[in-house]
Image 1 (cartoon, helix red, strand yellow):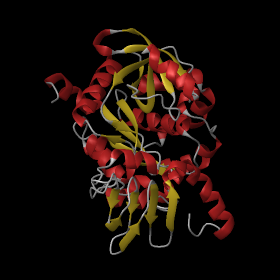
Image 2 (cartoon, helix red, strand yellow):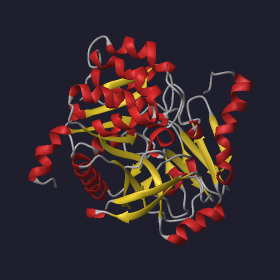
Image 3 (cartoon, helix red, strand yellow):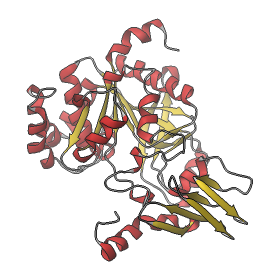
Image 4 (cartoon, rainbow, N blue to C red):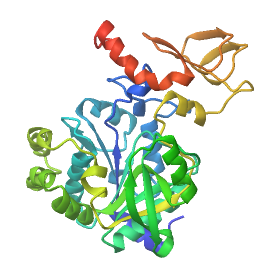
Length: 366
């Protein structure tokens, strides 16, 4: 529940949902033409993008939620989010990582509302405890509105995971906000164990909160090349001339993440530790871990008869019956044109498998 003050400041809250990725580790479910963020990965009747959009409605109105994506996905977004306008879809003409798209979004929002407070979030994450999530987001927005601060939500680690970057935090400020000491790249297992033992490290979830003026000052100081390319378009942002400017200039921006370009260099970075049932849903195994299971620990999505099988993820398309027997610890994903049967213990190889598929059949099945 938002307080009266929070409701008054809600008019300056904006959300940028990053939805331009391909999700190649979820092949063959996720394809170039319809990546995982547009799919009902959880079997709940809504895409990951739709779930993310609805998650943020308590903190801002639908017309304050912007989607940053690749131009080829514009029609999919309008189909899944009929509440938004075309001006709320930022179409990147090239995939240049997160720093350029965040700078572009901040400049566009600043042109709409110089007081805008901005949340940046991926479109394909799971949040099980949404009330806790909104509480942390609201705290971060309150802090970023008052201070020249770049805030990130840090996830309390539950295991020494080597697949995530880490955030080392230091002194606590008011309201559970901590100064960030440093960002650490994805560690090996022993290093991750050491991080967990200290109690000073959080997982980096890639969820950021700041005022647009704070992040634009950071770009001007720390990533001036990106700022110099995109800032001249401020007079055409939110006008019919915006896309032509972006198409011409955006591809010339450096390909770099906001972590490298800004967060690891800035001295005004803070984190709010959180535990809200988070998963980045990066692989089939992570989907298996988050979904309900039957009595034999199978995740079953579709019309499936699993005989003497356990610890499997089984996914079949609508209108097709799948029958499996004597399978253990496997991923079976059936689509209209591709059937994947792969050991769950080796699912990290699936991204490389797409390269083999390309060599075998070109782009037909990608």
